[in-house]
Amino acid sequence: MKIKFFFLCLPLIISGCLNYEQEAEIYPDGSGKIKIHYWTPHPDPESLALLDKLGIFNPDSIRNKFSSAATVIEDVVAYTDTVDSTSHAFITITFNHVDSLNSIKALEDYEFTLRDGAAGQKLFSQFIPSIATGFGFDGSAYTVAYKFSFSGDIITHNATKRQGKWLIWEYNLSEIGGGKTISVTFRPYKLKETPYWIYALSGFVLLVVIFFLLRKKKD
Image 1 (cartoon, one colour):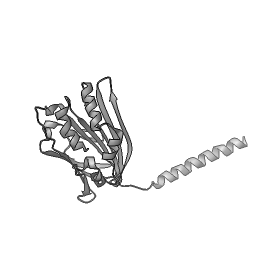
Image 2 (cartoon, one colour):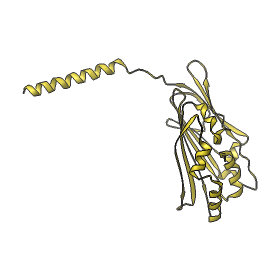
Image 3 (cartoon, helix red, strand yellow):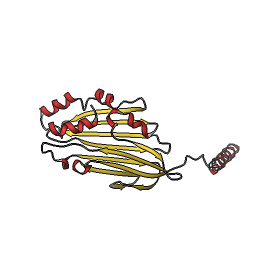
Image 4 (cartoon, helix red, strand yellow):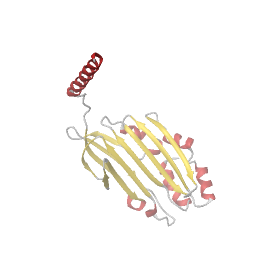
């Protein structure tokens, strides 16, 4: 059962909406970590029973749909909050290269890419597929959010906002239309060796410590 299937079905059968958040860190070598959180209200016992039947918040089902030979699932947490009558799922995945995310069944329509751009630059993109609606469902009640952090200098991006190191794309369902494309151009930080002055400073500090220890011993 793919995320796309979740999005298509739940608005039609539950009097609520499924919200989705994705947070990813991309490292200089193209590896990284992605965290996914989706949740939905269940205003009555019948809708909660339906969620259980669909398996959307079942840890085993989640692992099955997010598993891939090219990625590693670090953690899966699913729970129901009885205080506000919502169900939540959290998935944390690490990967050796951005493109490997395309091998995850639940994300196969998201078209992750990371390729070389101008000298020293990288071009990242991810597609946000369109989500069909109907039966009078109000798309403004449904939200998606994508947050990315890149280990490098940002050259260009089309994020809707930026907070510190995070580039953020936020939409409600009615804004997605035929789909959106996240795009970022950045210059990765170089992995440098430890500067020589660090070794020199460490050696100097060590000599000072030895000097005072010997002096104290003589006294």
